[in-house]
Image (cartoon, rainbow, N blue to C red):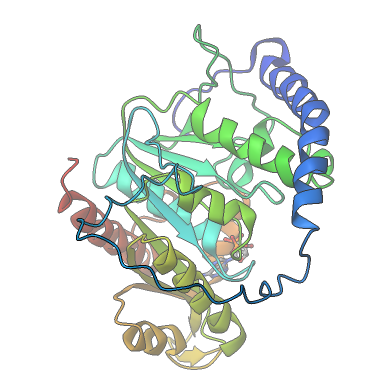
Length: 338
Ligand code: ADP
């Protein structure tokens, strides 16, 4: 661990989170009920019965009305995260494919090799792994004088995670509005000021949390991580479809754990099939940002809280992550917000 850490002052972080979330729970209960009732009007989402045919009307020649803004059409408005220039989502269709490992190493390489000011938001509310992967477990964020949570810092990366605020066993019973509200707080009530790139470690899949982020935050791009098995790729494609639907550009795909290089003889074996992510990316017209071998070093360094780009900067894995960081930053800086 490089940077000094500030311990939470008398557990302020956890108390803050618990108090606030308890309030949300109380208020949230009513809203959940009323919106649930509305949803229950058509639980199977069947198409409405056809309306009776209308008599055609002749209208005077008028220009078409301007398109309604998003809010008037009932769509959420995308609001930038204060103090953040670029936001990148790291996503996967399935859990366990190496999404968080990729997010952490990407953040660390952007901070340490591209010399950027980097934030890492752990949006995996039900399985936060960033505290462990950044060796920040057991630390609590402080509140600043504006009542904003101050991210914890390690390896030059500012991090915020539910794992700093709530015990895992407390969060698993959350549903609906409570989850959404917690997510909103992690996005909006954290002092991200002075961040060049915020990497969001998304939860796996394409559920409510993912949709909320894609609809409410102006994302500069998404990175899809997958292993090469068909079952992982099928879900990765759903992830691509989700981002396409909400007009978030896909920066590229990352193939993880496709091959293993024997440390004794150097033989390469394709553990989960050969080049599945590469092929899928090509079919969808997406670049492959990196092909990360399966190696016990990646797992071991993650488990002790030191990303491999920091622990073994000369390794093959670190080289791949570094190149990924270069490609991602090249794409982001080609945008207009730098
Ligand atoms: P996800 O975020 O998709 O659930 P994680 O990043 O938590 O997945 O990774 C799951 C497990 O796989 C972790 O123990 C991690 O250390 C390990 N892992 C990830 N990538 C590799 C790799 N390239 N080689 C070896 N182990 C890996």
